[in-house]
Image (tube, rainbow, N blue to C red; front, side):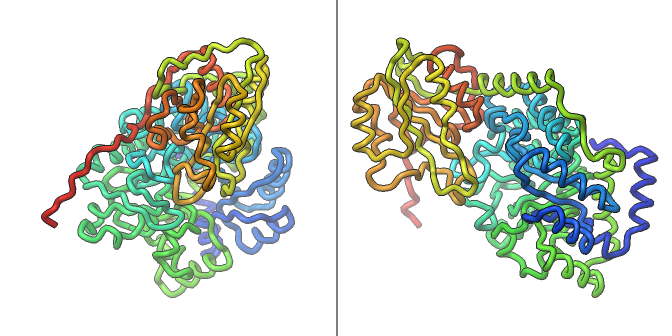
Amino acid sequence: MIQPLTPQQIQWVDTTLRALTVEQAVAQLLNVSQPMDSAQWLAFLEKVPVGAMSARVPTADAYRTLLTELQQASAVPLLVIANMEHGAAEWQGYGTNFPSLMAAGAANDPGLIAALGKATAVEARHIGVNWCLTPDIDLNYNFDNPVTNIRALGDQPARVAALAAPLIQALQANGVAATAKHFPGDGMDSRDQHLVTTVNNLPFAQWLQSYGLVWKRAIDAGVWTIMPGHISLPDYQGFADDPEAAPPATIARELLETLLRQELGFTGLIVSDATGMIGFTSRVAPAERAVAAINAGIDLYLGANPAVDYPALLAAVKDGRLAEERVQEAARRVLSLKARLQLTEQFFGPAPTAVEQASFAQAAQSMADKSVTLVRNDGRHPLDLPTGAKILTVTIMPTNTMIPHDDLTVFDEELRNRGFQVEHLLNPRSDELRAKAQKHDVVFVNVYVMPLMTFGTVRVTAGGFGHWGWRALFTEHPHVVYTSFGSPYLTHELPHAPAVALAYGGSAVSQRAAVKFWLGEIPAQGTLPVQLPKVKVHRPDSSR
């Protein structure tokens, strides 16, 4: 459970809250993330003194400079939010890039996931980030879910709960707030809450034994903040006969106040998921969105449009649609989080020492090494290749991604460093691939498909007509091996490929681990954190 504030922290919260005008208290409930320079940020904060901000800045030094200016200019310290699901490098390119959370699930090592938490917190707090929106404790029950996948720890409630707790505690012990997400739990629907309200369609009794267990363990671990998703729980909400009509948790008081707070016992801050998602915006008119969320129990509104949401909240307070007492309650939770983070004493943490940096890097590589999972092998592993062998590497990945992703260049570098001749193809046409493959001793087909590369799907969609040959290349070349640097469900896409390994993401450490594994330098130590799909004969009910 969350530890109580110290008497000094309580005094600061009380004094600060009393000094806030209604307008200032309402502003504390907003997070804004907009591309602005320091002058624009300063001018904006003077008009709307928001409680939290997010920003992407090219370098760590520039980030610290910006945050120094903004924090010094703010009467109330700012919460600074970043995602950082697998290390600080995910956000700014600074710091240690760990494998994905599902890789951590496959490694199944509480000590290593605690190291992820410490590294993320130390490196984040050094540049001024004090709140990381991690861990994702969803259960990946539906292999077609396009949002969770390798962002989640797995689909086994006990394992997810056991790994989430040390991650939460390590983050918070090192000066950064953790966020368990996405309540009441993603991973059931095959749709994307960026595009539609999604549904957790479990009967409530079953939800309690699975998702409920994980949420209760995260709360017992003392997580300071929880993020509801734009996800409904129809059986609990009384919409079992019409699940699509159930409102998402972000505007469902019965889920936030009754289930999360009263029944599960959460006392911390509730932060919405990003409020630009269609799973939210399709359910409420623009001027009512922030009001509906705060009334439902959201304490901090993530990704606010200040030109719309701030005046809408003030108008709702003025005409009584939003009680001032509710504003005060939410603002108190925002201020309490700032007190826990000791933002009145220091905005930044010390730079990680050389020893710490080395230990973080070692932990990241160890996690990647322990996560590699061999799911199918016909004797091709380990590959016995003489120095100078000719290797063809093939990356299959979407190119029109939401966030740019680099090709798997580290994989090729590691092979070259071992004395191999390496040629590379990205999303090749089938005829080109066949011609090149015949000139090489071995072909690595590396499939790089992850959640949020493209919205709405995590299926392998890269390449159009004439680009499918990689799927059957093993029938034409004797030495073809496949690695998924992303979704573990590649086996469903390649049911007949004879040699398939999972690396659960494309971070540099995961690429190195995959090379070491295929060359026999390390064993396959990962255990599947999810159940892989199997096709079954379906016998429809002919009486309907």
